[in-house]
Image 1 (tube, one colour):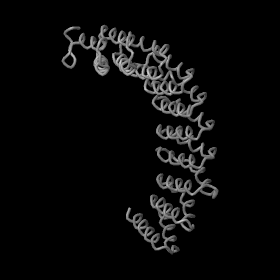
Image 2 (cartoon, one colour):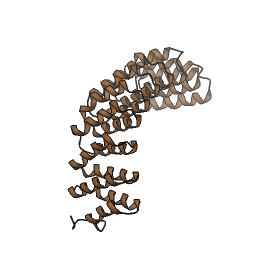
Image 3 (cartoon, rainbow, N blue to C red):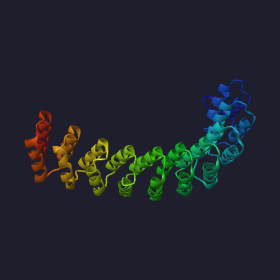
Image 4 (spheres, one colour):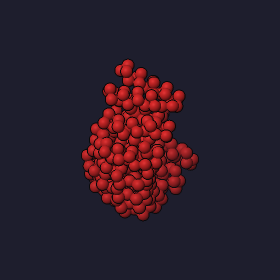
Length: 329
């Protein structure tokens, strides 16, 4: 050990600084350097340093370094901190450090237990985050239970993120199951974002189904946008029903028109055509754009008839441009 050098200093000298250095910044730096070495004597030095250290910042750096050593004895110490450390900041550091290691049962199970039972939302949130970083499929059941039982919206949002980090078909099933039951709009929005990011055809199908259940206009708008991000066949009946329903806000109709255009869904051309003769100029322009993403004689005929009937010079120019684009394809 005496011959090993880091930053021009021997490990023995660095450990001595950690244990006896007068300046806390020197001890922090010593702990930082030692975290890059799994030498048993280094681990012993870190554990001893933690035991005698009074400065919380130094103790926090020691916790980080214990995790980076990946040594079995270091993991045991971190688990001990989880159980007995009263300082929440240090406990959170220990959770983070454990999550930087391989996903073994002796690491995963204590963190799962904290997620389900700890009284402090900060600890539960850090535990949820750690399970996401560990990416273990064995945590899916715990994350599902926590998502259902957790009272804190911020923790729930973290659980949703963690689920998306685990590659398994069950993730979509869990999120879809919880979505209609969730009362908090921020959490529902997070689940919709997550399903969009997962990007599977089943996610798009379930989001479309959710549109029939959702009552919050902002979340309906988000849901339509989320479906548009997923590369999958579009089930349009629900969208057509919303376009026919004038009680929905303009923003939702705009989002659906954009979606139908982006998907080039020619079967929706009739639904889009009605906006060409409407009074809302924004929806009219968007419908022109959406129809312009499609092709075919029927689409061209619809746009040319709209051009003949249109009185607004700016919209006439937009129609001319779109019609010319379609003809030149």
